[in-house]
Amino acid sequence: MSKDNDTRQREQKRPSSSNYQYLFILAAIATAIAGIVHLYMPLAHLRMFENIPIVTFFLGSGIAQIFWILPMIKRWGRIWYYVGIAGNVGFIILYVITRFPSNPVTGRGGDVDAVDMTCELAQVAYIAITAVILAKERSIKVVDKEQLR
Image 1 (tube, rainbow, N blue to C red):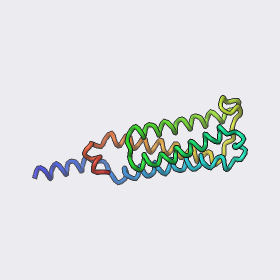
Image 2 (cartoon, rainbow, N blue to C red; image 1 turned 90 degrees about the horizontal axis):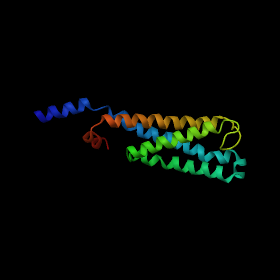
Image 3 (tube, rainbow, N blue to C red; image 1 turned 60 degrees about the horizontal axis):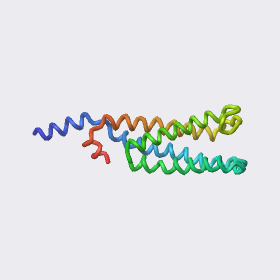
Image 4 (cartoon, one colour; image 1 turned 180 degrees about the vertical axis):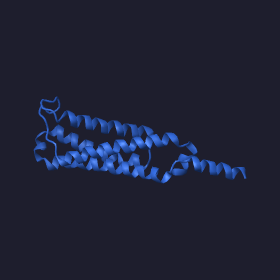
């Protein structure tokens, strides 16, 4: 009888796992969108190929963000989530800096278009969703985490 009571108490304290599990998929989708946009940028702006470091940056960041689908889907852990958040914050900061005239990165202010905003919104979504995942993981006990996998 006490075993049944313990199980019921644990189930009552456990946060809703159905919404929690979908957050990993949403974070993976958000980083995939940002990665695809980064890979698309050199193709959309062929003049970028005149500047190999910029093309390399976009291709490298796109590949990294596409790769980041794995840590989210496979739930590799908190360190991976924090690194993903830090990387996306870095991308956003770099984007904002490059929009100003006479910036130290490109020397001129960049244009803002719908493709840019799609990427930036996807990155913000990844950060927000992953932050929610981290907050939820703090509240879930180790035993419950194993049951969610």
